[in-house]
Amino acid sequence: MFCVGALNSEDGVLVNVAPLFVEKSETEPKVGMKFKSENEVFEFYKKYAHHVGFPVRKRTSQKNNERVVTYVAFTCCSREGRKSSNTSTTLKPQPTSQTGRKARLSACSDTAGVWSITGVHLEHNHQTSPSKSRVFRCYRQLDVHVKRQLEVNDIAGIPLHKSYISVVVEAGGYEKMTFIEKDCRNYIDKVRKLRLGEGDAAAIQAYFSKMQSFSPGFFFSFDLDDEGRLKNVFWADNRCRQAYKEFGDVVTFDTTYLTNKYDMPFAPFVGVNHHGHSTLLGCGLLSNEDTETFVWLFRIWLECMEFEAPQGIITDQDRAIQNATEVVFPKSKHRWCLWHILKKLPEKFGYHCQKASILSSVHKLVYESQSADEFEHGWFSMLDMYELKNNDWLIGLFRERSRWVPCFLKTSFWAGMSTTQRSEGMNAFFDGYVHSKTSLKQFVEQYERALRSKIEKEFQVDFKSFSQMVPCVTRFDLERQFQSAFTIVKFKEFQQELTGKMYCDIESSDEGSFSTRYVVTEDFTVHERVKEKKFEIIFERDKCTFSCSCHLFEFRGIICRHAIAVLIRNKLSAVPEQYILRRWRKDIMMMKLKSFSSGLKLKQVILLYQSWDQVVLVI
Image (cartoon, rainbow, N blue to C red; front, side):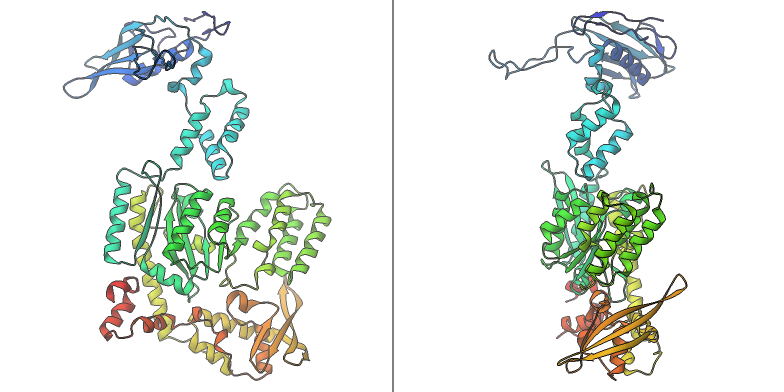
């Protein structure tokens, strides 16, 4: 075994006391040493150079008639050769790392493919330093763990220099590092670029241009970086844009499903249509999930939808999305996904000896609190009971309670949605069309196929609502009014409230000058125990208007069982049109067609209905 043990004048320590090795022997490079491949030669030379303290690189190579490499030369230092600079002057000399050395290693292969070292020059007219080897470019590398940590921290908005410091601490100091901060910055810059295969950018642009030529209502936009490379993409066909005009009052936005499952940065805007089904309202492919990227996406989407912002938007707790929402949709109500929050409870309190009781208490407060005061009183009681006053996560949740607790949000219309699972459901719709190896170009093409399948299913549901009718379960004229107006799905929801009236009882009424106040009690079962809950309904008979403390109509657009009990008590046979929301009507598309088809021939109207996404072309 051969060891190098020279004294380094720069460091003042004995260097290279570790043995140098190759698969067959542990020594420095010598003429005649044999290897299985060119790469094996290079890796052996790199190990030797790393121990001695200098970088290596491939300088020249030669190929035979079959274009196979048979000769290669590696220079043993970046300073080999001479470098001249036209910009260097006596007053402003430019740094250079080349000093005219001849140190190098050459090797060639025989007819059997065995490589042999044919020349070695190990002389160095400069100091070498093994402690500096980690700084040379050829030895620097990021492992998988570090890459993942940098990506997660970048998404969380943590500055890169802080991420780098944390990695240094974890490694045990700078001398243990195999990379420098610049490598981390270069890696993050690289992953922020949209993951495109060869030719994907041009193919996507050509595909979108083709779609736009077929339908002028097709909208797309590209976001480029400073070097003109594709970063982010947004597109929406005309069907999405027309659907937004009817169903864009509440939108969910979620980026997790395809990103997690297929490593596909898909960002859909999703609403709920008149059948209660998810409907796509535009989507994007993103290179990054930071505030700047989301601001770009939201602004482009808003432009696509003629600058009509949604009344409400539901997202997860992502800080970058929240920041972008405040910038682009300052007047829209922003709600956090309730499912994502409650999902974190077991993780946050897995250590607590009373974990089950805490989870039960939080769920009860969230789902059973009728008012803000009731929730807040119960919240503070829970903190006292389980000694959680100093829990930072709960403190943050309470501070933002108006974004996620139902009793703070039920007075606004959310189309019955409280989670982003609409977005996740839309993402899941692409199952069977994409997989882990799907390129971005393939995804865009598969997107159209998947969406057309969904459009066909929506058409069939529309047809079912027109051609079939769910029978009434009572003799009330009120039920027949909703039967003739609502889609099948929404009429069934109304029927659930109507039949639920049997569990309600009008406990008292208080006549006023303009309205009557009713107190309605409802019996419901929890864990096989019957409980009672009281609701207050204000009814104005002259105007035939009403409101209930449960706020089901405000939240979902469906009249609640408590109000139905009062309406039937007052023998009302019908309600004003304001209680039959346009967005739940079975004839909403025919109403839209009527407004578009004025002056058109019958054939044109039929084509217009059958291909709604081509409406501009047909007209």
